[in-house]
Length: 354
Image 1 (cartoon, one colour):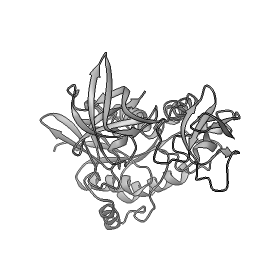
Image 2 (cartoon, one colour):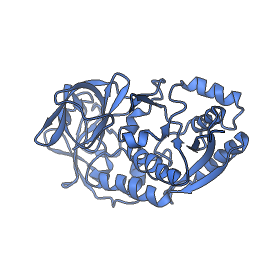
Image 3 (tube, helix red, strand yellow):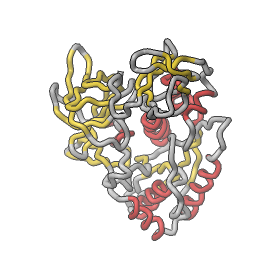
Image 4 (tube, helix red, strand yellow):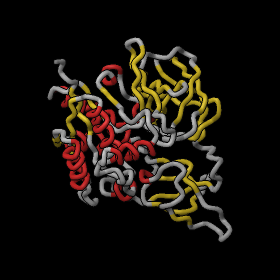
């Protein structure tokens, strides 16, 4: 008798990963449920024990082995410390991208293979399609849940070991399958917020690691119009967290349109849709990754710079050993953000804005 392929499923305690495990077991795989224990900020409410208990209940219900993998050190160093360091220098990082790269499909994949797994699987809404020996990453069928944006760092070597069982489904159908299998998580609400940690106020989180420092709020002419408690705490487009002292009762809301961490200033404007200071027609990328081979110079593709943002037309340009994208229409972007490239539903890869 042929040996069943062994799959380690990352059971988060949510419905998507639960259904992934159920579908794989039904499909004849040798399934092992794995809960990834990561670092939690000591000053936030601890939720991992409840999530682990839900994951254990699912494994017991499906009658599959269950284990806990301690990746606390890896998460603290590669996700939390990275995020804090990026904010300190005035960049806007995407910790969920880094979490997928270094934890779910980094440390977890590595340890799973060492323990005899043929594949790892997660509840991501994305599709891994093999065509003539090349693995293509495609958006999930459910436009409202597609998570391919967070997976642009994946390589061919990783994709050959990755399964996304719910990527070809829409969320309501996932719920129906969960009910059909009578999974304990069938009615559980979706988790929100930062990868593994959940919802948090980013400013409150960062204040535990970055000292507050009073600074000036400037208007678009460079005049001081208020005060704030640290430029590193702000993201572009933010409209709260600073005090405007030079204002009239008729002033429209102000939005952060620029920041200078070295001088500890932020610049604000009440023209929400006219962030002239941060609008760019092109952006240089670093940490570039192309999933299925490098694109040609001048390739015209689609891109998004924020999760669930509508796709925009861009041209990929290689010059002077640098990779740039040129936007057909100017975009509001910030250093540290991920730019993810697409051709139709296929995710071609991406990079980080310099």
